[in-house]
Image (tube, rainbow, N blue to C red; front, side, top):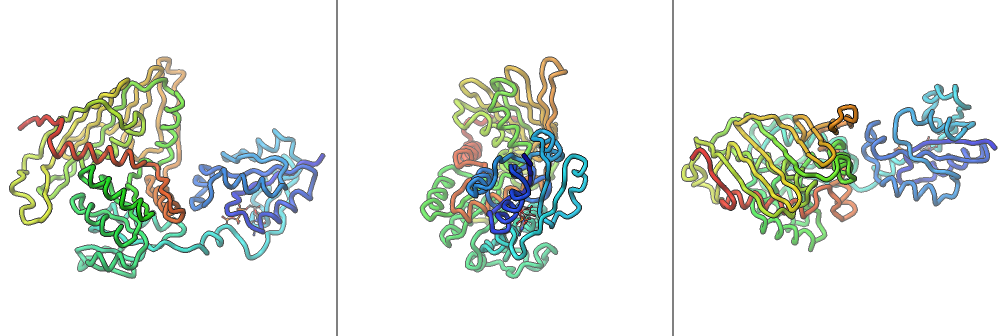
Length: 456
Ligand code: CTP
């Protein structure tokens, strides 16, 4: 029996794929089809695959041509598969001519003619592009978002709404529409990325949803839980996506860590401790450390322990240069005091958690998760990491995990946003329950609930 093997992504299965599979099958008696996993594709730079691995497998299965389907997960797996299954012929389309000659050492390599005029890339780009606008002042956060969004298929940045039109940075200049009129931007886009001050986000989101525009907004989405729940209900009633921009949730290392922990890597979790600090210079217009850094740390705690904590206690130091009276009087929105350092302790039925955030106070920005069998150590800056360690009593059991980090997770987050918008269902990695719990902590903090002020 002659065994043939071939590999591909098989996204949006098309005529070219089916012909290739038929020709491959005709080369022998038994056809093995290797389908790339999501990670493998991301690692080789193919980030725009539209369908999930499960859907791609189902589509290939349905052709009835493959005798066996395997998932391709790592570099070098082709050699392992060829040896494991006793493969006689390796084949792929002629677009890969020469690329797999090294496999001649293990079996015969055949390049089959590629069908002209059809590819997954074309099928994906034929689909409608989402026109996206950006709202906020020029900053490295917006610059990164625009750069990373540029790698994502099915998305095109149309315009920006910013108050500083006179001094535009280069990354705004290519956009077709530059305005300080938000309504004008909303009338020209299907989705909007909101980076503006946390004080303005509620009104900006509300307006966008009224215009039937999907929203991805920096975190925290609002400063009060009721505001978020109201916006969420509005988004749901209009079938619009309202997503919190928390890039950490989309880094492969963080996602992997969460599922490994859920499956018991370090036993039962007893404690989650997260710190995020910077020596940013504070002034009366700054946003405090909990508002700026809290969502990342809260994400780790809520993802791992859930949002049903029994109690919390907040200790905070306010920025000395600030008094509530001398800021924001001329603005119509209420402004809150600025914290330079805040520590929160949560008590859960069977675990505890703590976070430390600082702006103007520096600490080790690490994440430590303690369990009944061992602990996880994620070194600073854990919120944009490609690496973590599982450590145990016996150091010989320690394990290190590395994952590729492209664009701090922002790129993957935007891919997910585009997918949610085109499928009209929000499948982001930050569930509304978590966003809601984050807004509740921020709200309680600003209202002085469970707060002890130190260094008054
Ligand atoms: N293939 C083919 N003819 C086409 C497209 C693909 O013979 N018109 C073959 C490829 O050479 C490969 C297999 O189908 O052997 C799976 O290719 P894949 O990369 O999944 O498909 P593409 O359409 O080329 O995808 P993309 O545009 O994302 O690169």
